[in-house]
Image (cartoon, rainbow, N blue to C red; front, side):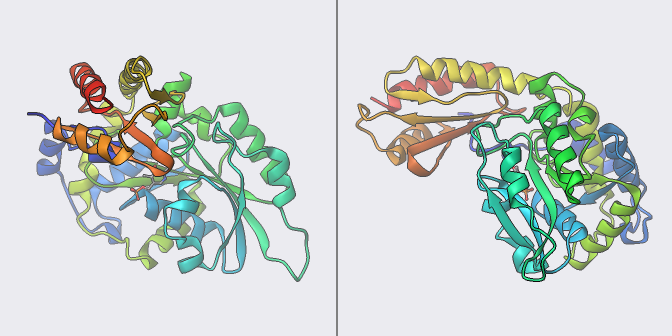
Length: 343
Ligand SMILES: *Cc1c(COP(=O)(O)O)cnc(C)c1O
């Protein structure tokens, strides 16, 4: 029985083409800047996002941390959303490792931060206070139903931040999903930010790695930050080779995963007792209504017995994430299993 793994798009295995490219990859010592495959991936990523330069890092968490360490010094403050990955799920690395304090602003249901909240969060020039340095946005917004931030919103937020002397970092772990959801070129979504991180290892199917993109000077400094957190890799071309295939083959196809998520949402909405949240990309949240006698844990277990893996989140919310390895047939199997699981 095939396991239908909807827990996350991080479970994606590399494609056969990626494995081939990894086997064949030309390599060198990347800390010396001599790995031709890493260099190629960094050029491709920069070009693809319309930035001057890019840096290959181990993970999204490292990418966000490296960007924050580069933008901010100790005692500086970064404005973050209260539902953001950087704030919730990165062990407070900015504070723990960088001495950067987060100033938390509520995320709206669509993943945005209200501009008046951002403006109000910026500190004045006062010796009592930390210095506001950075605004962090997230696109698509994982905890806000995988909603994409539009180019217009990002431009407005960046304009405000810049006018107040802040720089802007975008956690674009799933930025290609945002581009597909909005039907725009990814460059439009990152044009106005000073740095952006995106993941190769989620819907793009690479086994390891994320990219940080930005201006040439910023990336030169970020290369130093990556080294101090132990992220200087040597013959990393074996990993970067999969990233090259990810950009060439995967980045433009993620819209197919969105269609599967929509079909899953439609099917789930027809099951009595299941309440489905909005779906605009590959992430879908749903909840059980009171009429369902089973607890979320029991439903997760009943699904697992039928070969369907999902996460039961806090407050009885479930998350399902579609990706390259989830077929139309898998969605129908998931719906059949769910009908049984909630009975
Ligand atoms: C997954 C994710 C990250 C972190 O990426 P890792 O590679 O798991 O460290 C950061 N931000 C968002 C929005 C994510 O979904």
